[in-house]
Amino acid sequence: MDRTNPIGFFDSGIGGLTVVRAVTQLLPNENIIYFGDTARVPYGSKSNDTVIDYSLQAANFLLRKNIKLLVVACNTASSVALKDLKRFLTIPVIGMIEPGSRLALQESKNGKVGVIGTNATINNKAYSHQLKKLSPKIQVYEKACPLFVPLAEEGWIENKATELIAKEYLTELKEKEIDSLVLGCTHYPILRDVIQKVIGKKVKLVDSGTPAAKIVEDYLNGRGLRNISNQLGKREFYVSDIPTKFREIAERFLGRKISHLHKVDLDELINE
Ligand code: DGL
Image: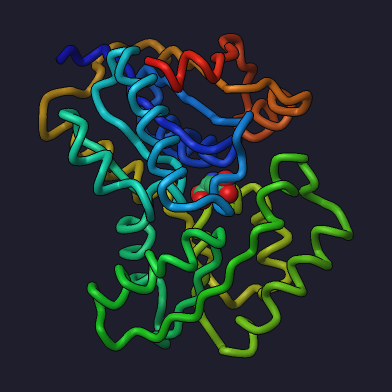
C-alpha cells in the first residue's frame, strides 16, 4: 500500500460530503475518491439486504481505484452493512456510529441524548445500542426524520417548508429535555442551521464527521500511510446519476470547485 493512494468514501448521495469536508479540513493533502449513489438514494427506506448489497457494490467500485482506507460516510450503511464490509474487505473500514456516539457522550451533561436518522438507522437502533454499550445509564431518545434527506439533496436549506418539517419531527425530542442531539445521518449537517433553530440553542448538535476524521488521521499516522506531499490532494467524485443540483450543492458545501465529477453506470457497479 502506498501513502499516495486515495481514501475512499461512499454515501447514498450528497450527504457523505459532510464527512469529506471534515477529513479534507484535517488532512488537506490526502487524495480522496467519493462515490455517491445518487441513482438509488435514499438508502434509509430500503431493506437491510438491499443496503448491504449496495454498500458492497460501492466498496468494490472504490477498491478498484486502489483506496488505502474506506470511510463509510453514511450512517444507514454503517448501521446495517459495517460488519459485512469489515468481513469482506482487507483494508480498514471506518463507520459513523461509534465516533458519533463517543462524541455525544462527551457533549452530554445531563445524560439525555437525542438521535435523529433515517428509518433504517433508527429502526436498527444502531445508536442506542452503541451509546448504551459505552455508557449503560444514558437515556436515548430516537426519531426518524426521512424527509430531511430529499430536502438536503434538493438544497432546501433556508426554506419555510424545511423549518415546518423540522418542527414536526423535533418537537417531541425537545420535550424530553435532551442536551445533545446526534445528527445520525450524514445529510443532516447540510440542514444544521434549521435543526439548531428548531431544537434550540442550548442543545449541542453532534456530527460524526469530525470525530471520524480524527480516527482516519490516527489510523494513517499509526500505519505510516499519511500522504506527506505538500500539495493539496486530488479530489475525484463519482455518482451513479448526475442530478442537476449535485454540482451546485456540493461546491457550495465544500467551498471549492469540483473539477472531477464522473458518472458511473449502475451496470458497472452491479456486474463487476
Ligand atoms: N446519508 C445517509 C445516512 O447517513 C443516507 C440517507 C439515505 O439515503 O436515506 O444515513
